[in-house]
Amino acid sequence: MTATLPRVTSQDEPSVAPEFRPGLVMPGLREIWQDVERYDLVRSVAELEAFGFTVISPEKAAPAGLTDRLLDEVLDRAEDQWGVRLDPEGELPHSAPADVPQPHDWSMARTNRPILYTDFPDIPRVFEEALLNPVLLALVSYLLGYQCLLSSGFGTFFKGIDTPDFPLHFDGSRMSPPSALADCANALYLLTDHSVDDGATCFVPGSHRLLREPAPGEGLDERVAAAGPKGSLVVWHGNTWHGAFAKTTPGLRISMPLFFCRPQLRTFFGLEHLVTKEMLDRNPPRFATLMGQDLLWGSYQKTGGSYADVEDADSSRLGLVRMERSKSIYGA
Image 1: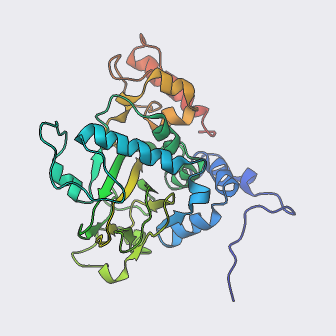
Image 2: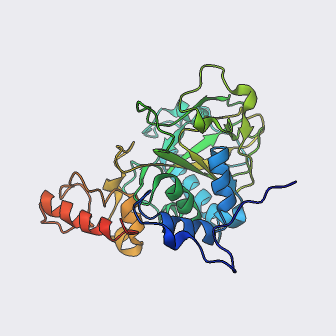
């Protein structure tokens, strides 16, 4: 007998969502669940709860050629940074070209580590589009709430043949006592096909419930691959044990990670300095929230980059502006 996931809404029965009391569990839960249903993500939410990760198909996760535009952009930026054009069907160079300034150790390009682009003075429009993908945001908001922040992002994994396994680990904040609620979450755009042999990201299903790091060697026999074709999107709970399989196939495995956290945590990188007034003007308010413009505590100086508030406002005024804005967000 096959179990069927219950739906919150049907044509015959109204949704229970309007009965939710805003703020009782977390601000915006009703609206977040409406997005989950709107984008047909109930199964993905069930997989996040049961397994700690989910893989969304390209048809749902990356409409209108988003993947190809992301891939072109990261290849252009890698060329700007390294002075060589990477071929997705080729291999990574073994060393940096002569006389090319390197903001990061070239050896990092031979590992499953991100090559971060946060030192660029701008964020390409296609990266803004990737961040505001409603499918991605529906799942990340379900895990972290509407006011979550982008902690690190706009980097790329380039993984070549013979790259070894990447060890299992988890990204939780390691607070004591640990919490089963996610305080961080990951999203990964697959910009090439990913399989076990391609060195796909791997997970230990259900490990997000253990609330701890894996011991050395633990969980290796239980790893499963987040396999999917180019254009897929992987989202996972920050407590889920994850790593990557060794890459044994030719060509490059390319992916773009976005790491999110709750607003009470400090982000990995101060991405707010990349935000311009033009970005805020052309994007919905959620973009400002994700980029740290709506925090209720702290203040940005005039040189810090918060164009969301008037330039001559003092810190107390900035706090009031952010507080008023937060009240208008999903009934917060």
